Amino acid sequence: MLKDITLGQYFPGDTIIHRLDPRTKILSLILFIAALFTAKSWVSFGVILVFLTVCVIVSKITLKTIFKGLKPLVIIIIFTAILNGFFTKGDVLFKFWIFSLTKQGLYRAALMILRIVMLIMGVVIVCIAASLYFTSNQGVSVYDAISKGLSARGFAIAGHVIPFKYIRISTDIICVLIG
Image (cartoon, rainbow, N blue to C red; front, side, top):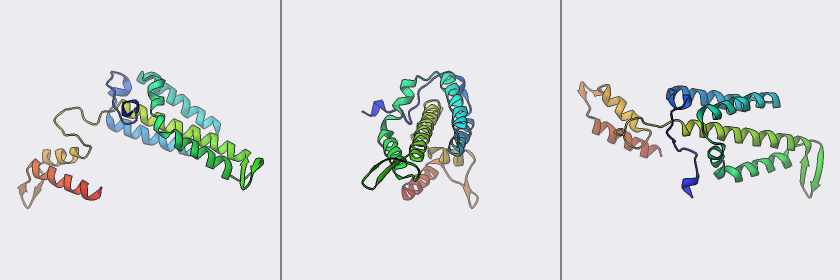
């Protein structure tokens, strides 16, 4: 079951997307999400879809792999569409008891489905093409980079340099307390 879910997995490759600097990937993803959620018309969604299509082609990731990332979110997508369709005020197309399917609701539901699908596709592309670490000695979690960075810079308290193992233990404790 879990091997079929591609969201968050890394697939090695040698494409332009894979070779991009990780900061560039994160910044691009943030800009993509901002553009996606500020888009209001079908034209703006079309421009974003063209950009997404170019990214898929350049990254050489199959559509089957990308759509596997949607698998765990199908229920959320359907639920969101139903809520938008039945609870948006407008011209009633169909009425059952207290539920009214409206023309404006269908329009908002279609935009929301498109937005969520494109969002997941963008995130899947970035996840598939971005490994968290490029060397194998740095640990197994994202916050390991904090302790590595602090120890590499010679983190000191009261003039005494703190060894890596104590920095690592401290960051582990802080992350456990936050979680």
